[in-house]
Length: 59
Image (tube, rainbow, N blue to C red):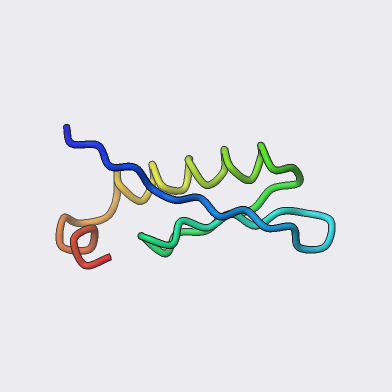
C-alpha cells in the first residue's frame, strides 16, 4: 500500500475545533484539538474505504 502525507488544518470556531484536510476536501470537528484531529483521521479512513479510485484520484 502506498502512503502519502496529508495536511491537517485545525482552527478554533466558537467553543469547538474544525479540522480540514485540504488535499482531499474532507472535514470534521471536535470539542478539543485532539478530538478534532482524531475525528478527521476517522473521516479520512472512511473516505478511503468508500470512495472509488476515480474519486480519490480526482481530489
